[in-house]
Image: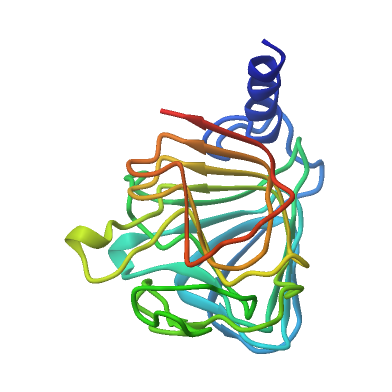
Length: 245
């Protein structure tokens, strides 16, 4: 009973509602309006606001993108494929709060409409269908990037109180796979806490090798696995993972 009550509390406090249409807990300051697109090639902070996410936005190696709490990012599948990608060596600092989570959604509110958050690292993998017995593999997300390595402490940043909505793409009917959150060889220096993957068209969270752990993860209404892992994922400090259909 305690676990059930805690699960209800987590989903109610971290992810108030399934879109940012509710204004009950918004910060008092006025949100900015903007667009995020292309490669992020220098350190950048996005102030609290409502942003359009256009294209496969890639945070380059050596670069940190910081997002202020309460911000919303809206993709639009009618304009092409959208996603937020953290390349190996890049960092995403997206620390929302219980009252002001960071939300990444899609205009049509149809599952499978965009690529979600994809993070790359160089933490170890064990085996893979593309590179059995080696330390590298090729991603399934259509970017065809290599991942794997020996850096168990890889640090891709910090995600706290982040909700991803309507992402995912099933690999059996396409030539690539997307999830709500995809972690390719992400290391244990990365913080994943209080995250929700909401109504995606594949897995809520998928770990492709790596050593990262997650705390308070909620997978809600996703069409395939709530949580999935492969290639020798070795997260050792996981607590409070919840799934709802």
